[in-house]
Length: 527
Image (cartoon, rainbow, N blue to C red; front, side):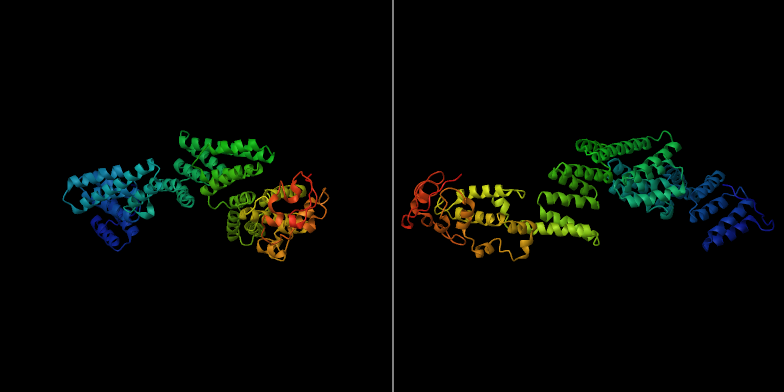
C-alpha cells in the first residue's frame, strides 16, 4: 500500500502519533485515524502494529482491499501478529476470497488456537463456505429460489453495503433464474456502474434484455462482452439464439401480412422450438400463432395457444382480447364475458373494450334463452326455405297423431312450432337475432309463447298453402296454441301418417273430407 508523502513532526514520536490515531479510531473518526497511522508508518516503516492498526481503520471504512494489503505488510514484518491474520481473514471474506480467508484464519489459529475470537471467526468462515457450497449445488440444479436463499444467508456474514462483485453476479443470476427481471436489472445496472468492461456483467445485462424480449439490446451487449473476452462462450450462444428467434419471428410476421397462413404458422412454431425458457418472447409467439389459427378459423386451437401465452405472461393484455374473440366464435359467451370484463377493469376508459363486453353480455343472455335455430337443427345463417324445410320435417316427426300419448314428443312438437313461429316471421326473427326481444314486448320464449295463443293450424295452413288437398284445413284443425294434444283430437285411430286420420293417405295419399264424427280431416298431398 502506498501513501502520499507527508511532513512528520520530528519532535513527535511514532508511538505518540499512534496513540493519537488510536484515540481517533475509538471516537469513530476513521479517516483521521488512517491519516495518523500513516504518519506513524512514515516515522517508523518497520513497525508491524502500525500497519495492522491502519488495516483496522480501513476495514471500518469498507476499504477491504487496502486493509488486506496492510495486513500482509504487518505479517511480513511480524509473522506472529495474530490480529493481522484475523483482520486479513475478515477482509478477504468481505472481498469474496474465501480460499485466502481460510489461509489467513488457519495462520491465526495455529498461532493462538485458544483465542475465542479466532475460534468464532473460523466458525463464521465455515458457515459462509457451507452456504456458498449449497448455493452452487442449487444453481447447478436450476433451483434458483433455494440458491438465492443460501446466498442471502452467506451475505449476512459480510458488509451488506459492499457485497463482493462475484456474489452480486450470483444474485443477478438467481434473479434471472426466477425471472425476476426488475430485481436482476437493478443488480446488473449497479454492477455496470462499477465496471463497464466486465464481460460477466455485460453478459448478464444482455440476458436481462433477452428475457424481456429486447433481442436487439441483448445482441449488442453480448457483442460488447465478446469484445472484452473473445472466448466468452455463453455470450456467443446467446447471440445465436437471439438472432435465430428474430429471424423466425420476422419470417412469420411477413408471411402473416402476406396472408400465407400456413407458412406463418410453421415459422412461429419453429421459433417456439428455439428456447423454451424465454417466457416473454414465447408468449408473443403463441399469441401470433393464435392470430394465424383465428384466420384459419381453428378457434379451439387458437384458444389453446392463447392459454399458453397467458400462462407464460399473465399480464399480456392483447391475448385476453384475442382469447375472448375465440370464445365468441365458439359461442362460449360466459368465458368471453370474463375476459372482456378483465380488460375493462385493466383499462376502464377503453371504449372498444366496453363495447365488446356489452356485445358479449348480450350474446350470453341470448344463449340462455331458447335457441330456435338449434331446435330446428339449423345454424344462424339458415335461409327461409331451409327454415321451412326443417320445420316441416320435425312437425311430421313429432306430430301428436304419430306419437300418441308421448308427452315428450308433444312438448317437442310445440317447441318446434314455437321456433317456426318466430323464425318464419321476418320482424320477429330480426328482433330475435339482434336480441331486442330480451328487452320484452315481443311475446317470445317459454310462457310468453303460450300466452300468445299461436294457432298451430294456422302454421300448418301457412306451410302447406297452395298444395293440393289443402283447402279448408284451417277450419278443420283444432287450436293448438296452448293446448295439450291427444290422438283423438287429430282424428282418432287412423294416425298420422298412414291410415284413418287425414284421409288415410298422409303423406302421399288422397281421400275425401271426413266428418268430425269420423275423426278425419281433408286429405292432401305433400310435394
